[in-house]
Image (cartoon, rainbow, N blue to C red; front, side, top):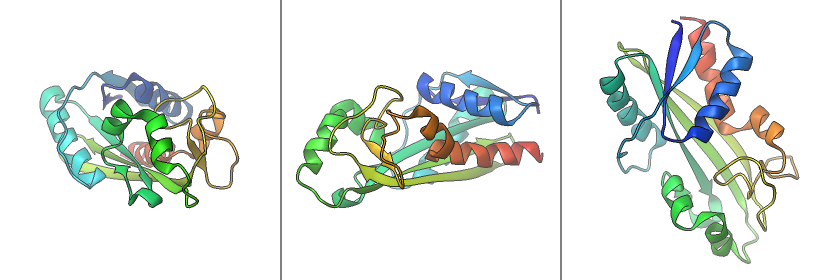
Length: 185
């Protein structure tokens, strides 16, 4: 296997994944497949990713993966969860901070599910990063909720320390699982 496609409409996600691939696997080239897909509504990242990768493979007919990520905030009963991208577009980080105003319990986690389809079967890989929601937006790097998420054991947001994100994020962990799988096939 020489080429693997990442089906996403989010170029930030692709760039992040491409850097991780380049640092961790030599014999596979990551390629972008601009994938526009109306994803199903579900409370399960895995269900969403499995359905999307089946659609992506049906269009592309080459080894492809998709990823679905959610920010789960404990004080908001797991919201925005699988609706994170939609919520980001509608109310952004400022809206989340308004919802969290005065909240002392700020624990949260990012979860990522990658579904990879090689034409014969689908394999699923998970990544998780525990942390907290900051009191205010901090930092200029990254995208999405990076400016309000502080990973466990740290004092900076992902947006303040992009190198930290690239070493411990939910996406990084799930991509490493995928890369490990690809190295062994």
